[in-house]
Length: 432
Image (cartoon, rainbow, N blue to C red; front, side, top):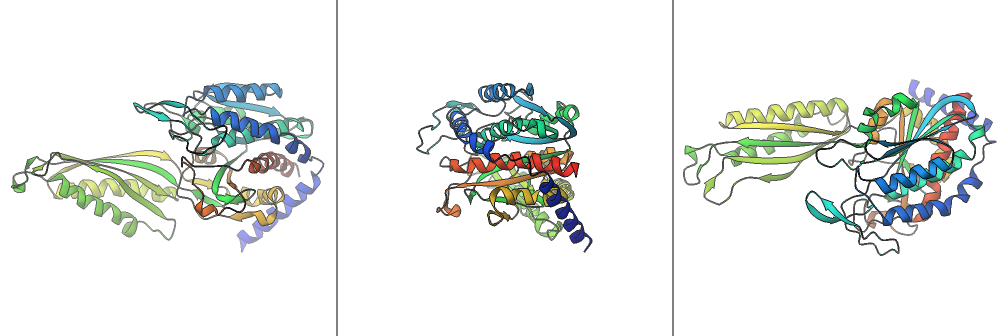
């Protein structure tokens, strides 16, 4: 009951503040930048760059922000760009974020601005494509920067524009992404009070917005387990220690962690083995077996328990078999959590931008996002923008990361306006 009352109060305060600040009208500005946003998107799409290598994209962003009279900082976390728009009146700072990197995917969509870029990735020649829509994120935030610069004299506070590299992960041996930008001090310098971000998705039709309070995207961690036994002839397994049989028991045991040891009524979790390798021929029991996989989860405490239980399970099963297990957990992105109060506070804005019938709560998403690092530092709201053309079933549309991933560009004006209006309305609420 207390939570319901709190949500109602926040909603009333938010609506009152928005009404009081209705003099900032960005409809015309948002409409005027639509063609530019599409042009930027097409140019960036045709010239994609992998993580920590987004030099061309960053240069385009920096030049645009500088043309708007902002304070601009470049070369953060390799290629990151931050623009700072200082409002005419004092107030808090709002962060808006876009990611810039593409994926090692060869594009198969037949559009005039199709990527033909080929580069080297992990020692192989690969195509490069904005198969996750980060090109649209950059273009929409560039558009929002122009819209908000146009109302700078009416802003009661500041806006921090973050164009981030390597959301999809840094190259092997490098740091990157949101975690590195924070490590290099962008929050300490600009001190944002809240963070907003969006992601284009094929799972919603054009113009629709999806959101969720609390955990919205999973943590993403990887594991590497090596089982060391003793090689012997396949006809006499008693003369050695079989790491293959031991590994099979470890797979079963680890899967029992989620089904028998974690309270999944709290939040769901997933452990998946992606690769098991060992041995060279049918009649030799090998010395070792290696197993790698992924862990997905929506609760930070459960996450730590899974890590601990995996090591205990693997090492003890190996020990019981006379083998040894070396368990390495590689921490990736934490759970992406939308601050409940902030989400409630800003929901009226999303409904105003897209229309209340076009805004809906989404189920949890087992993919991950490094926006989660920002949301660990300040209250965050990360939402989803539909990009599948109206009339097409989103369930049948190629999903993000597909070589056939396609974005209906008419969705970009909705995203541009949503980012702009969230910043304006949050600053207005803080002044109420």
